[in-house]
Length: 185
Image (tube, rainbow, N blue to C red; front, side):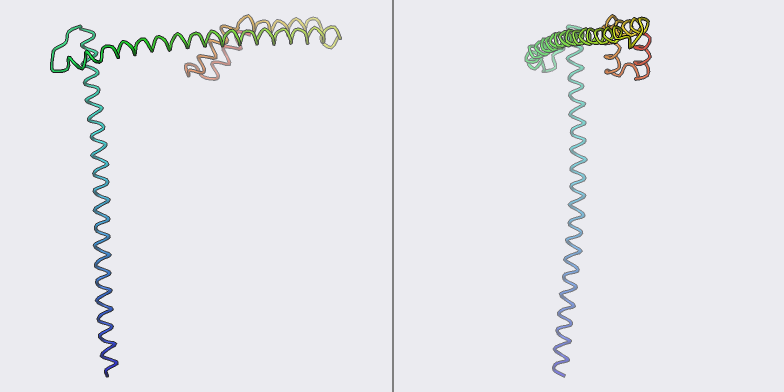
């Protein structure tokens, strides 16, 4: 009987431990759920703060734009900020102009390189066609047709390049690009 009583006591102890573990796990789970809630709320709060700050920036930008346009500034305590901002706005405009000038130079250099390449390809193709004509592989009519075709490509270089740039910028579709170039050649 003593063994039975000891087993009964051990059983009660184990049951209490199991209840305690279960209770602790429930509390830990509840805490984890609450921490997730806090994290979600903090994330939402941060998003709202970012949106509010963006709105403040837009308000400030509009204020500056109107002040510049009208040349009238109502002092609401931002004159010192505007004075500090003025050289930065001027420098930004200068930088934008410099970027455009550099991009133009790069574009001009690219045009020269591309045109040189087209002329080179024309000369190679002309030589190849001339050789084929002399060997009587193609007729004079075929020679002139093919030479005229590659000559048109060279003559319309600027327009073809402009069309390709329109396509690259998404102004025209691939089909429109191909149709326009086909009409030129």
